[in-house]
Image: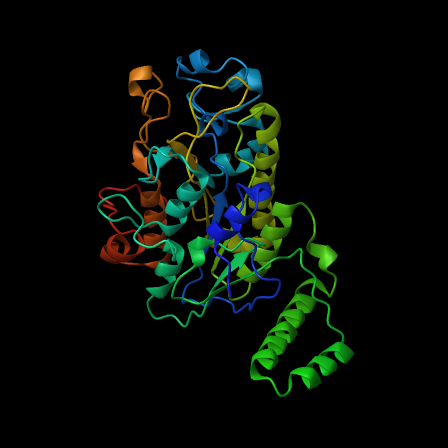
Length: 396
């Protein structure tokens, strides 16, 4: 019996911004779809501050709101286009920008508004579908799962979620599973024979034992029996493990990176999360090899943060944010979307970056071109209530 993210969250104050852990052992059936294209979705948990990551130093109003959170040249940021600069802790990604393999969408958000709850915001982001009243169509499935269920001419059995956290993004009718590279499953031949005898007369346990054997074999083949080979930083381990799957039959992978909830000392705390994100993207590039050219990475957060810093040199939950896109398949070196402006009259509720674009539309544009899914199916099933309109084409 699975434990819902909401129930687990309520049961422990110590994990007030976390989600439920995935089971220790889960089946890993690789996704096989009739394409050479790959999609990696990274959920950035905590509400990433778009104005610190993609710094609009060209807007003179930014300095009115931020005195202690430095930006632009004073913060060592990397100029992108004369108006926006990239936070220096993502500086290792600049070669991707220069090679047209990194892009951003600015001032984006889901239709979620006002309550600014991590829990609801993440559910809205991962579910992706909304009724006319702005509520979730279903809190039990995710847009990536619904996409998988529509994949034409495929023999796909599951999507692959990497990490200890179970993603709503992948929940739904299509079979999905997850695996954490930090969990070691080392079964000797003697242990396997013993388990076979114990479980022989119990169908349920026999099935579980076979699952464990299969998974143990996959890991042994992947990392030469030594799980330490894929233990580096958390994000690097997740990305490396995902890349190994993507180099085989897997075409869709997802995982999350936390640390973006920066209420205090943002200049000291945000760099850790950005370093993890940078490490994940560069590890994917290195490990995917030639398959990098057929890969799209979408990094998305539940909402942005307040334009003004607070009294503890941090920022609070906001609305408009930014989306990062990377990969060899991306039309990069671009900042997509309309800049909202930072004049107080331009802000959402006079405190947040005003969203000028729906973050779902960029994901919709990507999956339309990666997997050749019809616009009508995207708007009716994958992202209900979304009007793609003249959404930008972000795939080469």
